[in-house]
Length: 88
Length: 248
Image 1 (cartoon, one colour):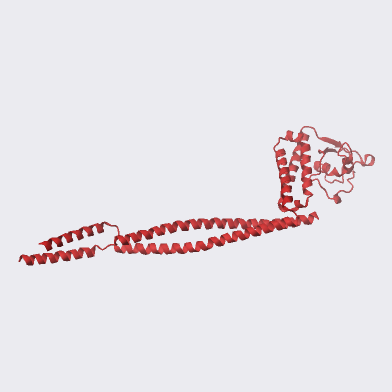
Image 2: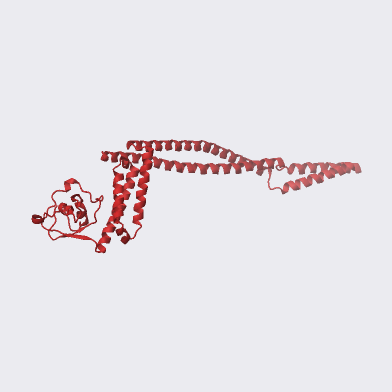
């Protein structure tokens, strides 16, 4: 009788053990470490992209200014030709 | 009994583990969602970075190319006037010096300026000498020379006003043509006036409120005689306008 009781008790405990372990299977610590690494990569990439976009904006402004300077240089050349024609 | 104790211990350990796992903030599904979202963000950012890494060198190349074009255009402009680097440096030094002198005169009070009117004439002569050089045709220099002339005209106008205010102005009363041959040309030629007939436009410009036509002046008209000096740009007249300047 006692042995039977013990066997039934052990069976229930083992089943309960399996149930608990099965039900509490969230992400493991390795999984969480992987997720954290991925998040850090995203943060780092965002920073790098922001820096590159700032550099790109600055270059675009420089390019616009250079185009104006070129237009002015061409205008100066034409004005000089007109002045030289009067000089002659 | 031993087996039971072992199973009981294992049960308690598993229970403890599941309790601690339950206390973390994330379920498996949530973790999987986070992984998906972050992976997509990472991939998008890497793609954006790759695009920027192509665009930035392209912009730098365009800027370098335009710099070369600007330099080539400026060199061509200088070559039109036959201006070497040394000539440009020398001309720019003289031009800057003239600009400084004009600015210095412009900073004086009206009374002080009148006392320095010969300095104004000297600067006018400097500017006229610079204008005669071929390099002055280069646009950037011609614009600076025009600005100098504008300031000089302003200074001369101030001096003239100051002289009138202080009663220093010279007045010439026009006589007749028949007897005295008074016309603007001859008046300017008089030693007591300018001793130089070619300066007659100064008298004309200084009396625009009275003289509408330089060919017509009238006896007894009182003409202000502006200070002597080179003709200002507004005083230079074409030869076709210098006909008879007769008096009625």
